[in-house]
Length: 187
Image 1 (cartoon, rainbow, N blue to C red):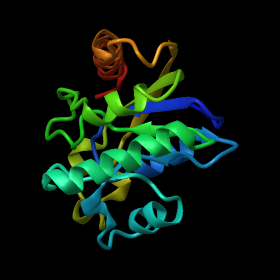
Image 2: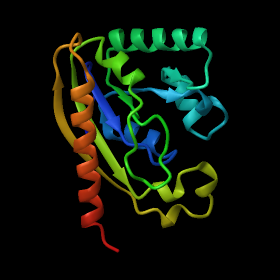
Image 3: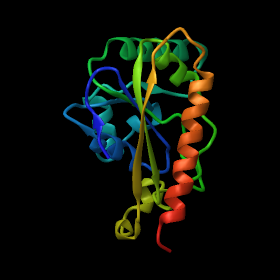
Image 4: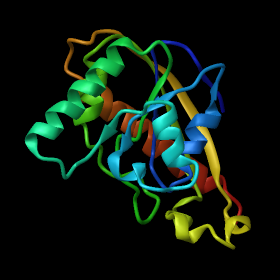
């Protein structure tokens, strides 16, 4: 699947493993996407940490104090308002242990949707959750049987509107798509 690499495109993806960041990057054509990423990924993680710094991904930290949280949200707001390429976010905020789509942590997504109209695409992956962490990959990469599908576009036209129904609808589409991926995968 391919996301169009242009301004005003927002990708949302479920979060199953550390491979999700390179998967989103590979799905975007003709541009470098700016991904909202957890601050802890700035530590030494091959490729991922370098990408965060190189492409100036906005970072979030659920453990931050109030002042630091406000700075991170201001940076995310500015990036969403002014970045001239596509953006992406993992609305669950963290990997799920069973690969199911978890509840959305909506604070960052609300900030992004509140900055401008967006053409939203949802990427749904499966098969990566059993190898969720970096240490799971060494010697086991050939065991991964991942699949990815693209949903959308979904138009978000009014940044002043209540984003809750829109976010709920996208999550519903993603849950349905994950169930379909699992129903059609070979044993």
